[in-house]
Image 1 (cartoon, helix red, strand yellow):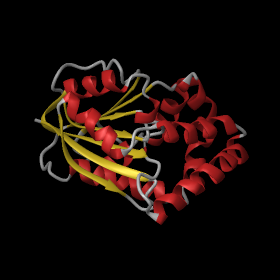
Image 2 (cartoon, helix red, strand yellow):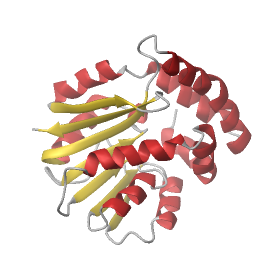
Image 3 (cartoon, one colour):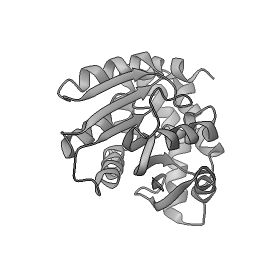
Length: 228
């Protein structure tokens, strides 16, 4: 599947669909990501948001750390167009069309790197994680927000997965007329590693795990990592 074309096709109603399908929880999840990523930094720095989409993470980060430089990287032209319109108030901003497998920055550039619901779309996770490790400064923070299917018998995990499987594709078709995009979402979650498996992949690259937490509803998982 051509991921940039898929997101180009749903860009105009992407935010509306996210808000309705997640029952508004995506805002809470993303704010938790930003707070976790920035909480130990007092001075100005540089943040890279990979798969930045329409700019939610950068928007929330700017409220906490307006003095920081912020870079958004995404392969979708249409998503970046909307992000540019939504982020006109951000003073230190660069939006770049590109792929996470080849990040166009020097080694040790960023204090913080974030990915919100984008890891599932990487063509090559290992290559991308190595690129992220390369451009992250020592003691910098890599923060991931990602969906995850149930990994135990917890009833809330099962209910949130049931809702995602059965209602999100229907709502996606209703709002965007592109059901296949949201069927892809469900399939990509189904095929994605469990939190434990993903942590093993990240440790192999060299990341140190700081925190892994299922948020509410527990379909979303927050990962905080650092480069030693």
